[in-house]
Image (cartoon, rainbow, N blue to C red; front, top):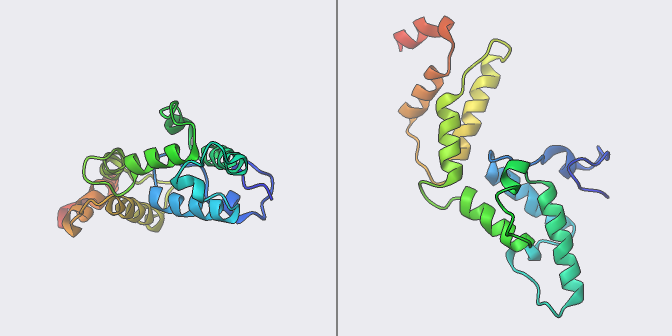
Length: 170
């Protein structure tokens, strides 16, 4: 079974629902990526490089690396030129996007998206609010705290001019 992001196999749940990591939704992507590696018996290579004299493990580690980088967007992958194993790529992703404290790249990018998101006419209100909720969840997964008041401000700021009376009333 081909689990690549562009495989024509639509019956593969991993290929259909995981998608390529582009800086958003790291915690969910990470969980799905690890599950994909478990299914292929490659997950051990996310945590450590194999001994160089273990040929079978080295081959599996190369497969893990090849599979992992297929699911990383070009903008992110281009910053990882020196990472040549699944373990080093995985560690770099965790350092930048996982729950590693305030000021991380993932937290800053998510805060920016949350502060600049705008509802457009072609997007329904429920879909728009779901998108904001997902960004909020992504931000909290980085270890950030977001007050309910701040979330309400983000939601109100995201509304177009025709909702001005609603913003003023609140």
